[in-house]
Image 1 (cartoon, rainbow, N blue to C red):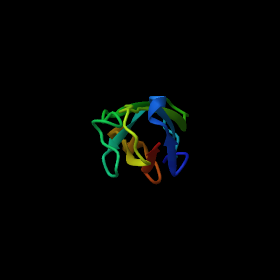
Image 2 (cartoon, rainbow, N blue to C red; image 1 turned 180 degrees about the vertical axis):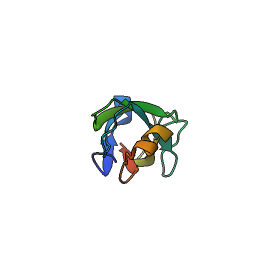
Image 3 (spheres, rainbow, N blue to C red; image 1 turned 120 degrees about the horizontal axis):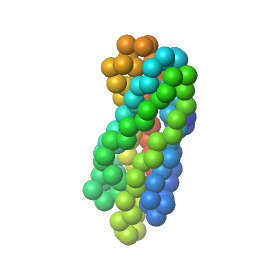
Image 4 (cartoon, rainbow, N blue to C red; image 1 turned 90 degrees about the horizontal axis):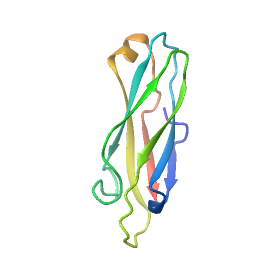
Length: 109
């Protein structure tokens, strides 16, 4: 799950850093994938990078951060919204790692 239910950032910042919390301790490394999705008013072309971010959790780690790239579009806009979704690789699923609520909203100013 994400550390917060929502994150907020400014386009001119260039990135938003999110914190991921996994439950269940694994004995081998596994990967959590952070997937941006155009589910609100923000555009993946103009406002944020739609590239997935892979975060590797080593054994015994339960908290990591991921960097989501924000694209400043130089347009005057109100608040814009998009979502991030977490996905586990098959190793993590087999080890019993869980992520709780895998979706978070990101607001851009």
